[in-house]
Amino acid sequence: MNDLVPVLATIVVIATVTTLILGLFSYLAFRARDRRRPAGDAARPAARRRFLVRLMLPEEPAAGGGHAS
Amino acid sequence: MQLRYPYVLAVASVVVTGGGVVYLRLLGERLPDGHPLLGLAANIILVALLIVVARYFFLLWFSFLGHLEAATGEEAERLPLVSIIVPAFNEAKVIESAMRSLAGLDYPSLEIVVVDDGSTDGTYRRALVEAAQLPGVTTRVVTQHNQGKAAALNRGIAEAAGELVLCVDGDSVLAPQSLRRAVRHFADPHVGAVAGNVKVVNRVNLITWLQALEYVEGLNMVRRAQAFFGLVNVVPGPLGLFRRTAIRGVGGYPTDTYAEDCDLTLSLLERGWRLAYEPEAVSLTEAPERLGPLFKQRYRWTRGMLQALRKRKRLVFARGTAFTTRLTLCYMLVECLLWPLANVMANLMLLGIVAEYGFMRLLLLWWLQLTLLDAVGALFCVAMEGEDARLIPFAVIYRMTYILLIDVCKVLSTVEEFFGASMTWGKLERLGRI
Image (cartoon, rainbow over all chains, first blue to last red; front, side):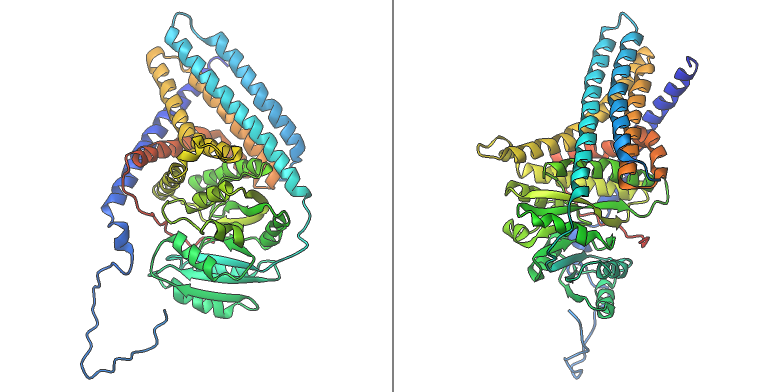
């Protein structure tokens, strides 16, 4: 039993240290990724810049197909 | 595995208190002499452990009493119209299964209101198609520009015709009996809302199994205990049933915090409503499967709760604040702020002792005691809920790894909230496991 205590204690120490370091670095990594993303508003469709813009010819009828809203 | 939980509770209580006493005795005998700082540290640890043991003891007993009360309740005599509000932002992978599960609820009079919050992945179209295929259930699908979850829920509540309003997440899948069991609590006119039992459905790796244990032991046991006093402090997003007059009376979901469910719950408590918990109202939810998304979720929860608490800080000291409101706010402050900080500090202190004195036994005993408490709690909760017994062994590493990780995240999130760092909603990607 006395031999077991240092072994178990060592496991707990290593696990605790590893967890604390993992927690810290995971948090920093998550925050770094989060900051690299565009701000919240940019993710919204209304604020997103269009990649393609539909051009309407003058003679094309204004009323298009049904668009659900 | 079905265990007889009254016996488990009796054993659990004895083990919890007995373990604490044994621990104190062991510690007193083993401390080396001539190190006053070590003695001080040991005493701090002892006090912390006593608090932890007392907390577990009360949680176990009151959750047991809450469970007895819920189990002896009768079925509802009246089944009023219930409006189910489903806010959905980019939930295309899961919206159909969620709608089907809602339509399949064992309840005679319900309507479903899906509010598409400006999704860009075809959620709206899928919801429309699914709505047309749901037999015998009034289903409406509305869409709006992206304004956030709280605004989407409020839009749904404004559209609701039911006397009761069931708010769920876009990925929630409910057990068929959930609504019928939850509605019975409204026979008491003082009950303003009922919290449901949220369970992790995707138990596919270590992180999700540990979350499943956390939901059963860390969240549901606490809710059960709180429900005994009618003071549930978070009616969760995946399943919350509200009296429509109550939710409209507080102006719907607040839109100025990141934990709208917690914020709304506190508003209801302030108005004097009783808040119940129904263990048989089960909602299955997807849990994050990787550490990054898990931290993203907990970051939002922590900061959102702190924001909700900060809005109410004057209530803690104000005259005329109800005792129950004051109690709930103080409890939340401890759970949200002090508890994680104490856990991280205790571990750092114990590591410091190991580094300085090479005295590892203190850390081992600390871990053993907490693991014992967690194992007992897990055994009790698994027995009471008829949950998967495979959850119990995870209690061995639950405290040492998972809770410590989450507490590190909570402490750092708290620091960011304190300094007012900017934040975004942090939408989790759905995995389509439901």
